[in-house]
Image (cartoon, rainbow, N blue to C red; front, side, top):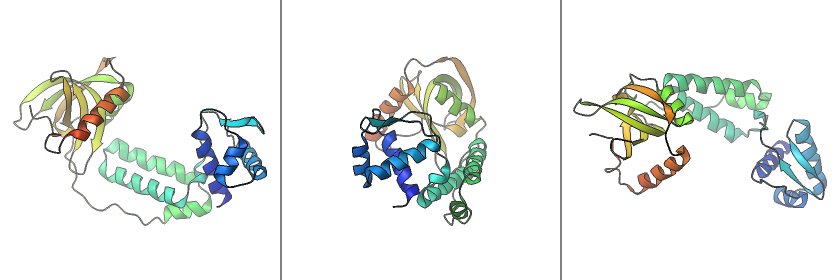
Length: 237
């Protein structure tokens, strides 16, 4: 195992522990000597990692440390490139720009060997059906999801009838042919799925919805998991 990979693994192990973990445990899990472990911890601390502790007492990584991308493996670089290429081609314009910008930031701090791996990456995204364009800004939906606020939408069903809905957005799904908003619908008093290209207008409401998003998201996942594909359809009412 390379030293770079070992340092990354050490950070990942520390991130998985909320309380101090002994050097003996860390060295055993990494398959290295205690002396090597102490050198690795010192190296990470020199790079800015807030690792607290000392031999005999244990070590803990304080939140907030962001390791430079120089620690990425080649497969992780491939995953990032492939994902960013998918987003840049399949997502909305704002996310497309964000994906390209994120990849540029990563590339700017990579060491030369990994920069070459990024620049010469040969994983490609094949052509696919383009999703219908929305008349609303999807970044507003993503913002409402992040801040846990209700949104009011004007929704057009398959019969071209428009109804006003107040919903609690919990997830936004990106597919080749459509994008779907999963939300709790106050009108129907249940989770519904709305195609974003059928949302004629939307407004973020000033009030938060009364339950936390992670709770709603868990409930929606449980319901979606037991439904058949025929049951989990777009809201047509």
